[in-house]
Amino acid sequence: MQENLQRQLFGLLPRYQDSVRQITPGLPLFLYNYSTRQLHGVFEAASFGGTNIDPSAWEDKKNPGESRFPAQVRVITRKLAEPLEDDSFRPILHHYDGPKLRLELNIPEALSLLDIFEDNKN
Image (tube, rainbow, N blue to C red):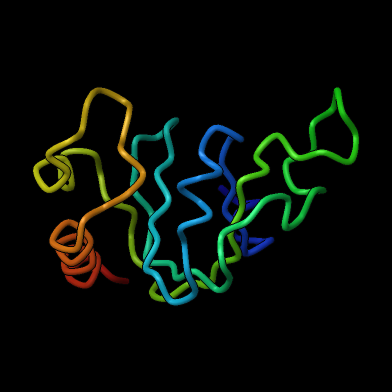
């Protein structure tokens, strides 16, 4: 999480490259922490999604110079808010299934999350 914020970069595994490539500048983004089961936001895409925007981010120890999360997008922080606990956003994301979340949100889901973060800001 800290590396995401320091680098202003989000990254995912290679299998998500097609989804990340659909990201365009200005798109609102959220960061889900699988360890804490919290949703962080609100962020905004500062670049188009791509591959290995910063190959040194989350460097693969077995393959120096390669990122473990090469599907990447640059981000900026739009609003600082307390992270949302799992039960506060679960009803919005009807596709929620255990620890898995679908990456793409529809417009009503994104707007609902933006509203919750607005009500929850520091």
